Amino acid sequence: MKYLLISNHRKKHTTTMAREVAVWLQDHAIACDIDDAYEPTASGPFDLIIVLGGDGTMLRAARRYGQCRIPILGVNLGTVGSMSNIKSSELLPYLPQVVAGNYTLEHRLMLTVRVYDSSALISESHCLNECVLKSTGARMIRFTVQIDNGHQHSFSGDGLMVATPTGSSAYSLSVGGPLLDPGMQALLLTPLAANTIAWRPVVLGPERCVALRPIDCDEAILCLDGQTCLSPQPGRWIEIRRAEELLPLVKLKEKPFLQTINSRLKPFNG
Image (cartoon, rainbow, N blue to C red):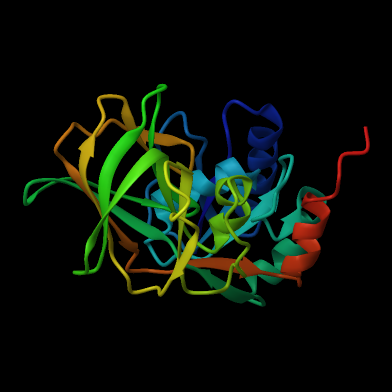
């Protein structure tokens, strides 16, 4: 049996805890590697991934390992931790239960994002929250939006986002998108400051394919989960669809969606 521990080398408390967990696992005859986003020394296969950090670390782990069918346990050492199932103080007491396999899995939809030049595939990436095509400057960005093989609709504005149900409570929510239950299978199309009021957030079926083409703006940028950014050249186009594999998240205790959202959206009382 072999586990992978994911921490953040920029946050000492996460790397310290990774070392503590590694000692516990080794004392129980379980091999482990540590991926701290600094030195890529991890080598699988792995039976389970434990993510030590906040939502940013979870997003990084999902993009890198989310299509590998490896269960991922999120342990909150960050500020929000909406995607983590337990707190850092709960990990060591829960570890015997984890090792024994006494947990359930909840599956989250992810996105596959492909960039094309004509019919040639330039790049392929995955993300858990959202993919956003937007302008980095003051100019509007222009392109057409096509769902499956349907009509191509013209878009002008600051940008357009395709989000997952998990990502519906993140960037998409801040620009007027609806909240979706994270266990749903759906795609969420959310415009950013569209130039016409005809554009409104739309919830699409999970098998839909969204094509954005061609990109008419020298200042366009393609952002995945707010962490990975690409600069698509004018004339290239982007295809966004559900990823082939669902992200398997370990659930050790109930964490009701509405309760989590309500705690995050409390009004500021400062």
